[in-house]
Image (cartoon, rainbow, N blue to C red; front, side, top):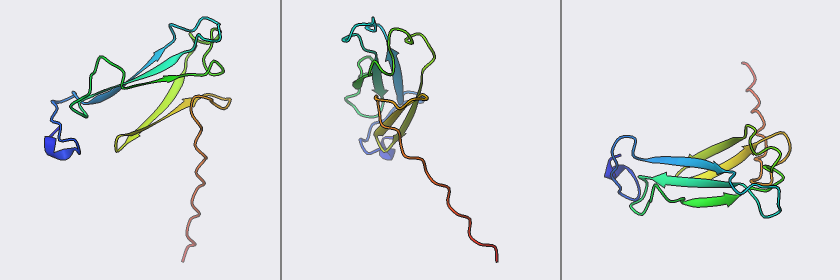
Length: 113
């Protein structure tokens, strides 16, 4: 990344700027304190980034990931724009990890002339 093309003026080589997500279920044991965590790592965006240390860690409600479903498939939607991140758990019941965005209504097509 060219240092003149980002707001922090950080120069990075090819494939050296990235966001990495890690779903950590090591503490999930069925107890109230045993919760899963989502670790977010960032590299190459700012000169203070440390790829080996999480930028942010989110605790996940045991309503979403618990001892009975910790090894099941979990899908997490991730969006990033202008250094703002949004996560959403993709499951059938409402998530307590992050709020679900409201559905976008389809725009009405203009009348034919």
